[in-house]
Image (cartoon, rainbow, N blue to C red):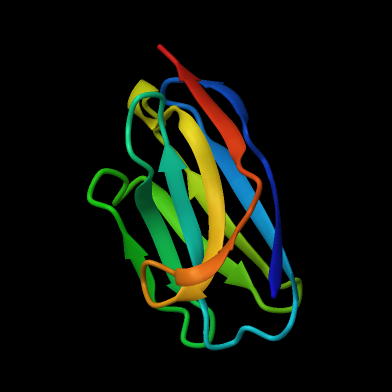
Length: 119
């Protein structure tokens, strides 16, 4: 019932920055969490970050804590992932998700956007 449209992926050198955006539409989702997973070649899809839409509480994977910041714009129904000090290990397809709880279970996925960090 929630549609998610991502943008902002691209190619960046190690140490650089990118900002991902995810615009949400559809039925109201104020009780949802929204956030990001990523999947690198040969690896499982892993949790990156999440934000509680109503309260704004944020959660991060240890691998990105201190480098990535998740935020929301209520007026635009959009969640952002600001990524700095990017590493080659951050290379993955990043997927926006909205759902229940920190890990956004029983929710909807965006289409994914490629982030490539060169060494």
